[in-house]
Length: 164
Image (cartoon, rainbow, N blue to C red; front, side):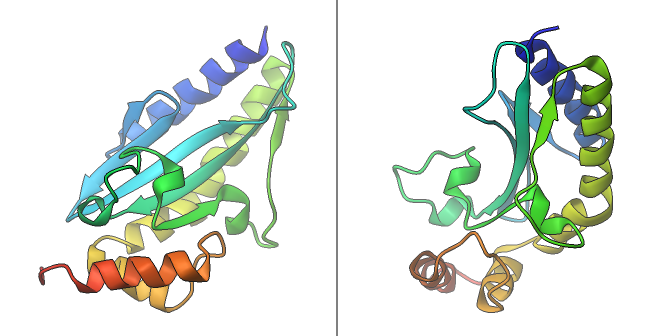
């Protein structure tokens, strides 16, 4: 199998798992919307991947579409107002990547990814279920992947939204 085949295997497993949780797929990103919030989960492929081996991680984000700048991509984890890598949900947070170079390592990576999503990452996304909850989360400083200036700008934009 090629690295592209491994990516297809991982994306197919993610799609099957996430579809039952309300997510739709757009390329290598999964998204769902509720109450003015968009949850995103994106599969990232490392530049160090080769034709026969792929290195992957997942990025999670929460976007409030009402406050996106006109130039921000609507369905990109990089536009996230709150964002984390999947490794931050590990007992010892780290930058977690999986190296997939066989059908067995693809199955193993999928099993581990789905377990982290199910037990730790999706419950966190579920908790951030409205612009008000996003603001509360950012006020608590609960995203290591969002810089202080970006956090303050997002909080100002959220505060300017009409109440729910």
